[in-house]
Amino acid sequence: MELFAAFLLFILIGMMIMGMVFYRQAKKVNTEKSYVMPNLGTVNHGEEYQVAMKHMLQHLEESYPKNYPAWIQERVIREHYINMVEFENRWFEWQRFLIMAALLKSVPMYSEEVDAVWHEMLMFTREYEEFSNRYIKTTLHHAPNVPRPPEGKADNVEKSKPAETPGEQRAWFDFIYLLLFEPTPYSITALGPFLRHALSQDVIHDFQTLAPDELEKKYFHTNVVMNFAFMQEIVHTLIEKIQSMFELLATHVDVHGTDVKRFRLNATVQPKNEHPLQNHLVGTLFLAMYHREDFHEQNKRWYKEVRIGA
Image 1 (cartoon, rainbow, N blue to C red):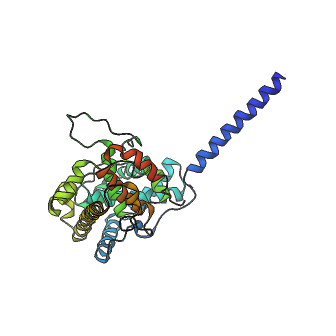
Image 2: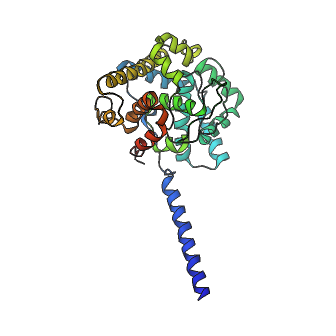
Image 3: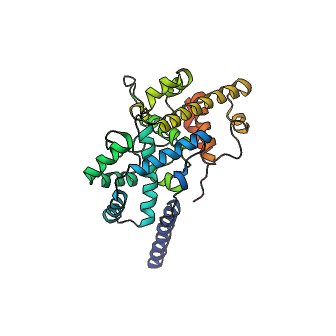
């Protein structure tokens, strides 16, 4: 009898382990599927912006020395034991990172998978320098992959340290990423979940009070952007878009107050035809401004409803 009970227990434990394995696999992105999108999946912010972004993408492609992408591809696949589909997904996110690195003053690297591409690029020293100088007219210095900030927890920072917390840095990264690109399931797998943290109060204050040229100098890579008219157009549009969000939220609060349910029912700030994460982007800004003390609690309720089809 004891032997039979032990046998049943063994079977039960085995089934639980298998269930956990299947659950984890279900949570993973399909490694055999390509999530590459045309034009890097850039978000449309108007005709002039789209023209500028087209020039930006063309400039990026033309900055690579001859055969350099093919050498990187061969090395990444060989050194990291991945297939072509996985490489294409990594390369896609790497290209997106490069767009952000050219535009922003600082861009953390949140993906080990994408960072591996960067590491292998650096192995070709001469070609990497040539690419950097063509692309941004200076060296693109490697930033180590940084740990993702913990989800759902307030950042613990000493009062004597005014610098942004890891969560606030991630919030700014997410904010710009989602203004530039439509996220894919692979984006979330490689970079981690988006919009789990509140923008810093300094960023919120700056975009409410500073002039566009002051914001450009403070947050964007002006030494690079000044060399390219199309980058200037992209930066100006991003600043205008962010400031318009603040104006939209101020108008809503003036009329409807700061109640979360009323905010989510307002189709002006939460249009039904938008990508879920685009609505959530405006929503996290609303929570960061008017519900900062319970941001994570309110945000958890919100992002349970955000889904991206795999």
